[in-house]
Image 1: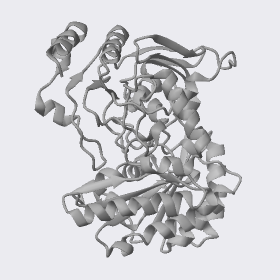
Image 2 (image 1 turned 90 degrees about the vertical axis):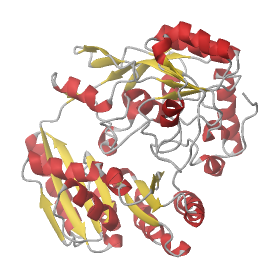
Image 3 (image 1 turned 90 degrees about the horizontal axis):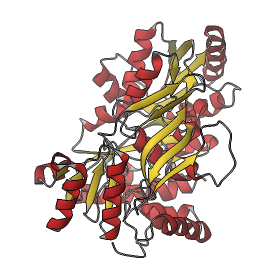
Image 4 (image 1 turned 60 degrees about the vertical axis):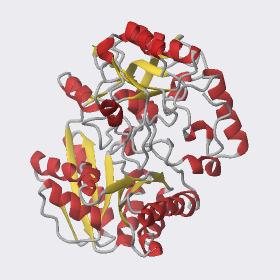
Length: 469
């Protein structure tokens, strides 16, 4: 990068917030996907004025800009495929206020999800979306990917809680979308458009969201099955029971064995586990769990049990939320995928996923877990990306996952992780030419010089960008 650009960046954010050290740049070159790209410079702004000036400078000089939070992405979304600037927003991490009368909280994009909920807990409220990476995921990244997580079945995704956004456009202009009110239809819904835009349209600098009173009680049950198909059918039956639990999670054998060991739990050998939780008042949560148990019992689980106290409940959730981290210890490369299928198709999806390693002489392994209650599965591949045969097998398996499982069963190529790089070849297969044209048109309106997160699948798909930055 030209020295006069670096000098100007130092003037904007301070020398301590501009970094071209190769070791530092290396740390921003990866996420959990098997891709690696290097930026020219890392920028760490601390306020909206700095973000605006950095973007204006980048736009004038056609320099690619890659917004980044904690780097928990599982899609290659923040990787700087064309070099340029990585804009690290983690220093903008203040909770700016909680309006208890209107049930709204305002924060900067670098606030960590769990830190927000720790803050809200003192007031008796919470922000429901609960990704497994909640201890590290930033709210800016969650908005950018429209993250969901364990409680989405009942409480929805991140975008369902966002009231308004303050954001900076590529030219440096500051916009405010949405409204402080709970209802407003005075404009196109730009807030919802930006939610899930994966850093391709604007950079968030402030987030306003509504929150929910904490439930009085949680009731959690674990069901073990010795047959994958029966476990899948139990999910379908439970989902149709008339009860909407706050979580319904699935883990297969490899995931169970690995995460139970990681969390120090003693779980009997089985093919599949369902973790189902209800919440609300004590009596309501108990009544709903009873209905769930009666429904799932008809599918003949090997055994089931109700968590007897908060400690046991937390242990089960530690095992579920640590699934990816635990699996990552078992292989050089661990790549978590993300697909959704209609609830009724879950048994067939699980069956097809389970057979994938056989098609490659077991050069790769697959562990599947996910948010079964809304059809969102995370097949996670274990392999060694340094071995060409295994890397090649993984990318062929990727095609099977999205062509022969997600799309063939009427699903979607991503439920919450985003398209990023890993799924860019499949966007156009899910969406027709008219929809793709509309998305590209929206991108050109917001970012005519294509400086924001260029090279990613949303909205360009696999065809590349219309203009090189």
